[in-house]
Amino acid sequence: MTTNTAQQQTIEQIKLNKIIANPLNPRKNFTGKAYEDLLASVREKGVLQPIMVRQLPDKKYEIVFGERRWRVSCDLAKENGGLSKHAIPAMVRDLDDNEAFEIMTIENLQRNDITELEEANSFKLYIDRMGDEAVPILAERIGINPAYIRRRVKILELPKEVLEAWAQGSLKYGHLEQLTRVGDKKQVKILFEWMEEQSRFRHVAVRDLARKIDSESPELKSAFFDVDKAGCATCFQNSDVQKSLFGSASDAIQCNNPKCFKQKQNNWLKDNWNDFRAKHKLPTNGFRFSSDFQWNDYEEIGSWQKTPKPCKSCESFFSLVSLTGKVDRPKVCMGDKACFKKTTTEAWSEGKSVEKTAAAKAAGPRVAWHGEHFRDLFFREALPAKIQAGGVDSASRRRLILFAQLVSNRDLQPWFVQRHKMAGEKEIDTWTRLSDEEIMVKLATMSGQELEEELVAAALETFLQKDKVTCAGRWRAAEHLGIDMAQEWAITEEYLDKKTVAEMMAMGESLGIFAEEQAVKFLTETIGKPEGAYGKCKKGELKRVFLESGVNLVGRVPSEILGA
Image (cartoon, rainbow, N blue to C red):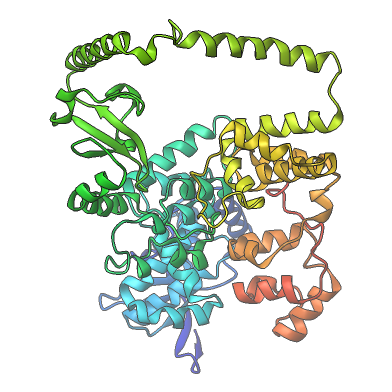
């Protein structure tokens, strides 16, 4: 028996049947290739590194760390006479419950093969037992930022199916971080189902998910209620609060809990409906949110149509408004469709009778739509004939292409308005839209060179800022322009922050970074570790090897970045 007085521990050979597993060990998976490799090694050479245990009052020994070595030894012992006939080298240390738990946690977190889910569970167990105030101490001991720990624990609040997808590798940690931005669990499940559906056709990148969340999150500036009194400024679902943690595809300050935002908007509109109705000149008797209904749930009365008298007093006569308070449908009927048909038909007939007797209409066209129809038919035939005949100069062709791009991609119009200051002092938002005439009038003022530059700018805006092109599409565009990701991409601090110690170790070895002279010198002289002992480094130390040693990281591209 060996005694180490400095650490108050002994190294002994302890019978396998005298040892029990630690029920608090977050590691639950003891199968797979790594386990089989260890089994083969122990079969050939025995256990080379002692496990750590502590003695319990009942004379049993509880594992502090090294459970996998013990399990392998038990499997081999069962083939050779049983657990009571075989022993394993173990460091026996006198530890209380908290001391044993702390050592077990730190040892687990510094394992090279710890999974992200096991890491998150380790953090949660530690906080549940030691308290949130102990997080900075743990962070310092394993060389990471306290925010990293809290972010990983936050992930565990997501639905079970999301965490299972993460454990299976179909979701990246970045996806989960984005999902934690969403305050409504029902909405999280909807987003998860959307990703599963999209994955049948394309990979949903973290950036794609971030944009999806941003597009469905209302801007706080659109709130009718007092956001300060409502506590929105400091709420975790405020994108401005989240930005330092998760990033956002939008610069706007948004609410990532639409359900809560919607309830507050609903309460304000109910309390202030008369003022809102007067401001927007609405004849209706209430409102509903557009997002709650499909087109076939209601019948619409056009804004140009006169409202039938019976509708004005009907309880089913509403206005549909968006979550941001924009009036989408000024006049809709959500009552009986037969009643609507009868009422509007009678009103229309009455109106037509009045028209027939009005002198002002006597000289007008018999059928109102004939002029518009045949005018448009002429243009549909004349435009292609003119273009195909080659009678269009290059500037006009660019103008037509840009016009078609702006008309077909309406999400591009707010950018166009802002770029050319077409709104003057008016505030521009995502709902800003231009008429076809306004677009063409503006394009008519541009020279051929200006149109060329505008086409390129519009294409870049579509590629970079709008959810219109997939990552694969941007990749192909980059290749077309001669951008070689395999030669130009470089490992960044943000990328390393998303990686576990095991992933960083594998990356450093596979990409040849750890073999570089600068890395070896930094490890031994700056970090103070033996040559080649990268596996003994904490995460913060490994990050420094990557980023501060002077190794050229340009062109060192992991296979996941290359899509391999």
